[in-house]
Every structure is written in structure tokens, then in C-alpha cells.
Image 1: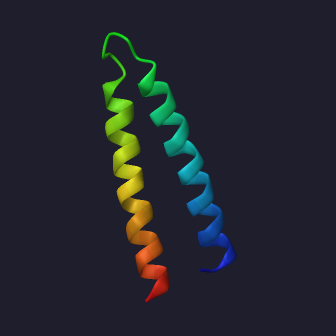
Image 2 (image 1 turned 45 degrees about the vertical axis):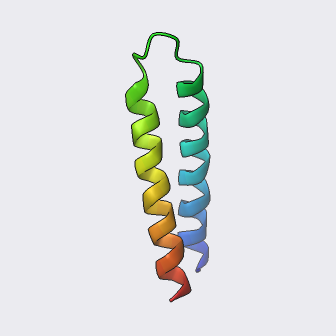
Length: 54
């Protein structure tokens, strides 16, 4: 994985983790979209990681 892709991967991973943490403390469900977006980012990160290994 080249440095630029690695930097993007790490940044998106950090964003995803923050979004997951925020959604865990959402008492009324109004931030449920954050968890959905974080899961979508996670899926993209898996694909990025898999593609970089090929």
C-alpha cells in the first residue's frame, strides 16, 4: 500500500471509529445515520485493503 493510500486508509478509519463512538451514545436514535455511514466506510476500507493486497 503506497503512502497516500495508507494515509487515506488511516484517516477514514479514524473517522469511522469516531462515528461509531458517537452513535453508541445516541439515546434517541437521531444519529443512527452515523452508524450506517461508519459501516459503509468500514466496507470501503475492507475493499481498499483487499485490493491493495492483490
